[in-house]
Length: 248
Image (tube, rainbow, N blue to C red; front, side, top):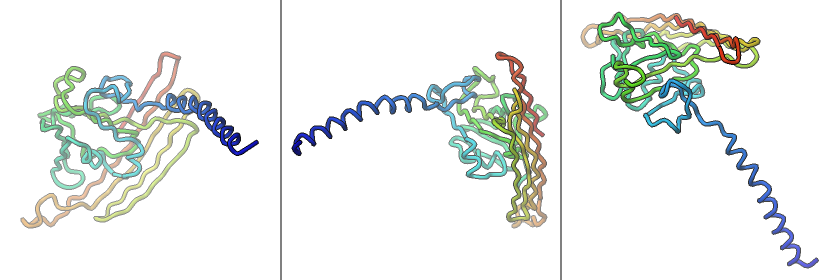
């Protein structure tokens, strides 16, 4: 067999390999699962089908950035402003797209947690830690059709972690400036038809003065936050699942 015949044979083999491998690539692309969000339609929908402005803070982002509170993560979301009335532990409110703080509806696992005892029915983020949080969905813009007049600015939905697979535990301890320290532990998994996750943590900081030092404020305003979160889901039948979410 001469060199020309060998070249034709190799070219034919390469073309045949390309034809055979193309369907495999197509199947891999088709098998890619699109990212799904819940908040925009109050039911799972691919984020590519949502017309509103949505930002999703995923578990990977939470673990990589290692923030202590929800407000620290929300500061990075476009269209959101955070106002703190002092240091850690002081009142923290969220303003979205120029609206008032009471125009932002806050949900934890789909349940409204805005404080009705406040005159404006706003939500205070001061003591909401990242304990047992799986993801945060931020829906910007008027959402009154689905959530009522309180969602003029938008909706923030804090979603708890769901237990999957064999039970496993975790624990952590951190220390930083201003005598700040954080310790905690948790466990999650599945037992039979029940999935669960829970976490406990304690966060302390010596803090800074809420009163300007230049005006004589020298006393530090410290903060202690104790958090507990439990998320349990039991599949009773193929069409019915009972869920319990507790957060303190």
